[in-house]
Length: 421
Figure 1 (cartoon, rainbow, N blue to C red):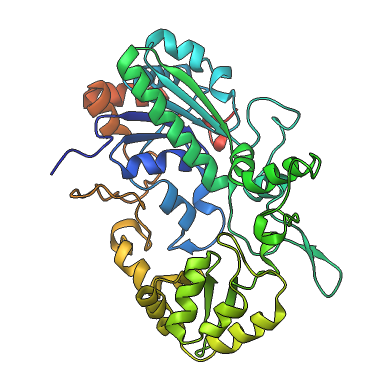
Figure 2 (cartoon, rainbow, N blue to C red):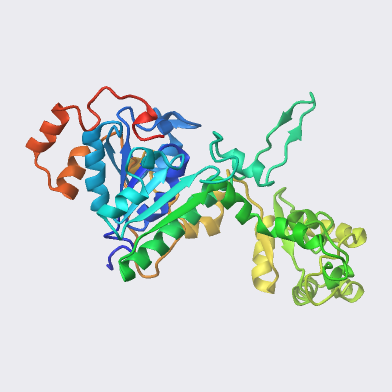
């Protein structure tokens, strides 16, 4: 088998909580990640739910495949160890409030003197600049900041956060990982490292570009920015808000109570649907425009389609879509998606026996290759001796000597302060 895509890339990560996800995609592709933790460990192990046999699923997932070393970065001996590890690494990641490592004397400017090809990445909530840079935050903050999630009001008049897919805490690490790979590629070519900075709030806004850019475009006069030809050039609400009145692009309930998403917005697909169904009169009456025609607001057609989709099960409609070349998609929930045959074909759960909880693998596939299967997320300092042996070539006697002098997290330091700002 070919070597894993990122085999040979070493990343030294000083992280706390969710931003540590920035290196998880790289671990899945074969990179070596050494997670530097304070003596008490990263308290991510106690955060959120579920707690699986005493450890949070969040830790088990985003720190899988990493090796853990405990260092108290308030201790000069441990700072020296950190510098030595950084000198032997391709990347240093600061996954916490930015500037914490610099305040300890191991920021980008200090470390690049030891390793000019070093790539330094800092990932945080609101980034290094702006009025919110020092504002404490957690994951959902970036979604509500970006306008992705709207507060709801319950029957008692209390506002609450509705269920939603988190954006910033997932997109931020992916953008960060992309930046790291790009910077490493350049460093391998030029010998010059670089400083990558990503805010999870920025990533949330970037992922929702379609809505924000549409509102921005609508600030221009309608003589310059209109809606679709199929809508008579009338402007719709941005993004999926403009789908509410859709008909040929809409969700319908099937005979078994499940739902399907009908997407025959192109005239050719709409014609395929009507012909295969034996209902060509529907096409003759409402042929629509060639592209992007959702038959918006056509309640008569919507009633017809509602009754038609109620005649077959969701699975039967999916088969119909394949046979007739009509875009019809299954509608799943996070609970039911694992039963979907497409999901089962594309994903193989990494079992709880391997990782402590059943987890999804990377969605990336290298055709003809098997990517490495990550190991279980580490306990605090689980690999301290192993890392010092492998990376710095220390023997047991030297490790014992440094530890007896209060280094390697053996001192009195506790809590997250060992690696935080």
